[in-house]
Length: 228
Ligand SMILES: Cc1cc2nc3c(=O)[nH]c(=O)nc-3n(C[C@H](O)[C@H](O)[C@H](O)COP(=O)(O)O)c2cc1C
Image (cartoon, rainbow, N blue to C red):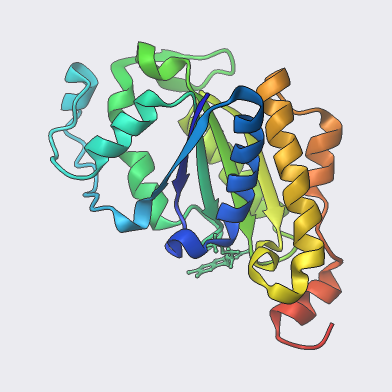
């Protein structure tokens, strides 16, 4: 299986969230024998979609920039992990611009789905992809934000078959927090294996991943630089 991580954190390789996505991808590849490509979207030159809709007819965007390479990587992948932190209660701009430029993945024709929502019909190559969203947040108690972001992501990409959200993600980059982060990364790697083997995660795994790594009060001490 070829896995692509689209890292939407402007911190690029220093991203907290990337620790989680890399662990999940490692799990997938250990089962499927595949490889992972990582694209740091903030390092790419990506113009805004101008809404000309020509790509809906031709499958090609008229703008000549780094998005051409990103779409080529998406088309070559079996699983695409959209990896990003919550920014201002939403998706960070460095990834949002990429998402808006994925218009060529679908045709012009709009249909209504089983849930009564309208969407463009996906092109053949894109329909079979599996899209995963992995999102971290700095604030504890981010459930409301995660619900909105998850809904937005699933509405945008019908290929999305898994969304994972983890609060307190700065802990993945704090040396003293390693004893907390390591078991969570191990759990994410196991989740990747489960996703590759069974095509989905059990309710138990999803629940285990949603539990904060430490209670809110202790986390806030870490976050505010106080002794926990
Ligand atoms: C501009 C900006 C906006 C942010 N907004 C939020 C927010 O609304 N809610 C939240 O929980 N964390 C917010 N954060 C914190 C990040 O989500 C958090 O630090 C995360 O771990 C960063 O992940 P990354 O290293 O993968 O970029 C924000 C951080 C920045 C820099």
